[in-house]
Image (tube, rainbow, N blue to C red; front, side):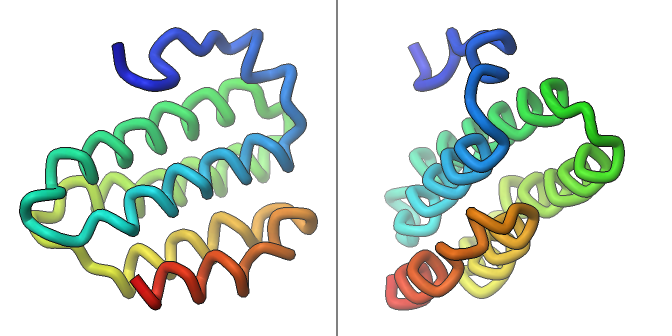
Length: 119
């Protein structure tokens, strides 16, 4: 069973938006570490989890503006998912944008961003 597959909207909604964004960022971090062609399947699985968690976050979110921005961000991840090659620069940029949504999460930009770029 895929990780997060049984995660309900009710359970996801019990986490703060900071926690939700950081959990999505953690999954993006995991995907960013899977560079090689042998890792392609695992990378796609991570992106699928990111998309699922983002969908749950959008459904749980009451603020229209944040919901709209998350949907736009989701499109970036969908492009990464569909790309045949791993683009570490685009991936790192997507992580940075995600973390900028929430002040608490933005504190992690330097840590995660540097880690993604160092591979």
